[in-house]
Length: 402
Image (cartoon, rainbow, N blue to C red; front, side, top):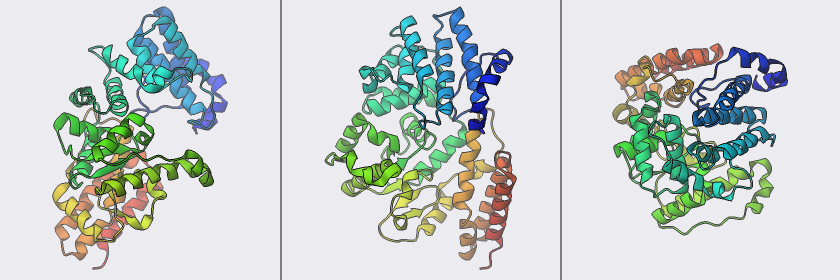
């Protein structure tokens, strides 16, 4: 739908600009919009900037509206044209040199000629200039970028603690990450993919001291030299050197194979138990016979074992699942919260019949009730056919003959 709208953008954006007031631009993970909305918001915030060129908040929102608009119209990298974002950044630098907002935005979009930004210098400078009333989203962003470019910096803990205190992430997303974290064995490696199965877990570690023995590694971090240097040192293993040109034989999938080779090297050399988030795309290029579902996480194991017994233990003794059946709280408005909740249905549904086969009818019924209420609460975010499919799946699991 977004790509269709792009074709008509020049016709409708002017109308949207008149009808829209300037609104805070949030992460698309928290609250995404259609392409033309960002175009209209860019025009609305441009007027704010023209009225007061020293308004850093206006510049911040102008940059993000333009950045997201460029990303959508460029197919998130398919088309390499980000001239509007670059233009905003250059004008910002001319108007507000060495400002907080400039350094913050350079962290999201780095001009090809800006070597300092490529090194991450602007992140450290933005933290130095950070205002007391910083937007919670920007605070979380700086904390995560600092974790990547300077992982041993003590301010990582400080910034993530403030992120937790500001209640930036909805409680449902925090619950999901807490459950994943608690079911991991000591000194485990946890390989994640997206923001919402990485950062909330790090927040729990830094702000609450939960399971700090677990090492969190996002796929994107594999390309960050400072993070990887610190990781190799912590694991006491030799750094791995790969030649990117050797992966040309994989065509468009070269990056997945490149990253999976790094991960397998880390697993084998560190000799630590390794787990993947359920959204990690790299599991598709690993040996599927070595990936086992343990409930909400996937374990890498070259040897077969009874993973269902572990998953059932996690459901019965480790996970807090009752929240899935509860109504949303005020700050649980992120549209992605429901998508995270639905992971429980897809990952845990088959355990209902397994509890019954073990003679544990109470746990089977409990899990069925929780997942059914979760499905009912999340149904507005999913097509009717998907809801019907999962409803049938849950009933079949509960009624399966022993």
